[in-house]
Structure formats: structure tokens, C-alpha cells
Image (cartoon, rainbow, N blue to C red):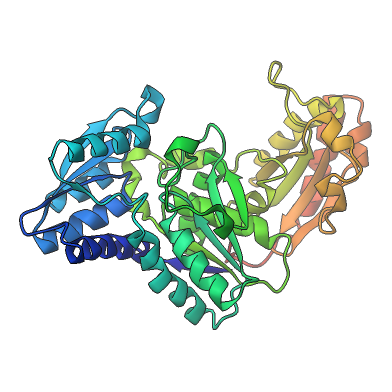
Length: 413
């Protein structure tokens, strides 16, 4: 898996849109630009406007990070705030206000969501760069979708070189908020977006994106933002089911622009690793080795929304003791929920079919090393009559398994 780590994904379309507007005669000396933005492209536009001598007004939701606001202001941009999505505003409100201001003659909107110069910059720049650096071996291209300019332009170029290259876009899971990417309502879907250029769309939760983002910094030394964490999460999901693939994922935002939000704080990191489900298991287990050893995975039933207890009585008996014993051993436990009862009981459950997991029962406690899942404890936990008995069994298993720790100290996602 290759990581394309670059700020050029924002700078390229900013320069492209300004240059095209100049060529068309829309921008003349002394002109004022207006743009709705959530961050990266806005910063690039502010920088380009400063170089070109244009004034710029940037409209953004109130909940965007202070670092991004400060970066725009540093380039001389005038910042205009609209309510956040949770207060009925968001990027939709920012785009609406930009259109109103242009209609009132207050400036010119470049409209990164509808400006063909945006994807054209990636068709001319990002696409050829990916193709050249992979020597034409790229099989999958993964990109977060905000304006969709990156994925549209890059997809167009890569598909022209090899129609079999698979293009994967990602958007926030319903109810999740991930800075830099959006799940657009139909009426606000960027007009540059062409559905046929994306082969697959993945939904990524905020929790998964931010967990992977923190692991990128801790394991790889890549200080990136939430949308990059989402892209790498999607790439890890793909890699779990592929062989001999060259997956390129775009790391398009910087972590230092999110420090004030607390996503890199000790408090946030202390919540990792968080329980995961079937979909986000590949990225969650890839992050596990970045935490203190010994490492264990426990496959268990989903928790009931009302009681907070697993629907499986055996899991409810065993889980507290397992967590306590892994903690006492100084290790890390990843809790993996297999789904509701009817999902788990199905013969084609992904964890039953996966040759690396081959799960036959829950609860199941498995030692995890840099070579993957290892020794496991299942039937004894299932048949334990009391929580104390289950904990005693888990304690002995964890003690035995911990004696055989991996000697590798460096792990990669």
C-alpha cells in the first residue's frame, strides 16, 4: 500500500481555478474572491490570492479548527463564519451565502464544487503523478470525497491508462462528522461529481477515521488529519481482502491543523483502541500493534442499546474478566463485535468465511502478533458457568500467551 502524502491536492486546484478565471477575464487586478470552504482549499486559495494580489473572503462553518482559520487569516483572508451543521448551517449554508454575496456584487465565486478547473488540475497533476510513481502498477486508488475534485480528475486519468484500476471514494458514515469530507444532500452534491467515475463508495465512521489518524502519527510518523485517517482506513479494509494489489491512498490534510480540537490529546488517545465491528475490523486490528503488548482480540456479541450488555449471555459473563486480565497483564485488548444475533448466526458471516479468522464461536479470545491472529481460547469461555470461572480461564490463557511476545518493536499499518 502506498500513501500519497501531499498538500498539492489542495494547491493544484486553487492555482488552476484562479488561472482559468484570469484567462477568461473574470478576474482583473484588484478583484475580490469569495469562496465557501472547510479548510484545505481555502488555505490554498488564500495563499494564491496573496501572491496574485487579490482580496479574498472565505466563508466557513463556525466549528472548523482554529488552526485552519489562523492559516487563512495569515494570508490576509477575511473570514466569514456561518453556523455549524449541528446548528442548521454547515457547508451548505456557506455555499448559499457565497452565492448571495456574488449576486450582490461583493466579489467573484470560483466555486470549487462546480468549477471544472478543480478536477482538471488533478487530471493533469495528481493522476500522472500516481501513475508515474507506481510505474503503472496501481490497482486501487482511494480518496476522501469533499469537493470530489481529487477523485474525479485522478479517476479520469487513471482509467484512461488502465480501465481496470478500481476507484474507491469514501464519505462519512451517517451521523459522523469528519473534517474535510462530506456526505452531501442530493441538492448540494458537487456538480463536478460524476458517479460513473467511482467504482465503490465506503462509509467511514468518525471514530475509525480519527483512530487511524492517531495511529498514523504514532506508528508511521505521518502527522495527518481526520480525512486522511478515513482514506487509510478504507485502504486497510481493501488490503484485508486483496493480494498482489498496489493501493494508493491520498493523505491530504495535516495533523497540526487539528490540534486545538483535541483529537490528538492524551484523553482522546486513551480511548483507543475502541470496540469495532465487522466493517472496520481490518483498520482496527492494523492499529492494534501500535499499543502496548501483549495484544489480544476478543470476538464478542454486540451490546444491547438499552442494557449495555452483549446479547450473548456467555459473552456477558466473560467480557469483564477478560478486559480486567489483559489490563493487569499490561497489554491491549481489541473488542470486536460480530453483529446482532441473526447476523452472527448466518452461515456466510464474514468472520466464518475469512481464512485468517475462521471464527466458530463467541466469546473467542485470540492472541495477536505481527504475524496475525494466533492461539485462541473459545469453547472454555463459552462453557464457563460463572464470571469468576471465565476470568480464571482467561487469566491462565493470557499468562501463557504473554510468555511468547513478538520480538519486533516496529510495526507498520
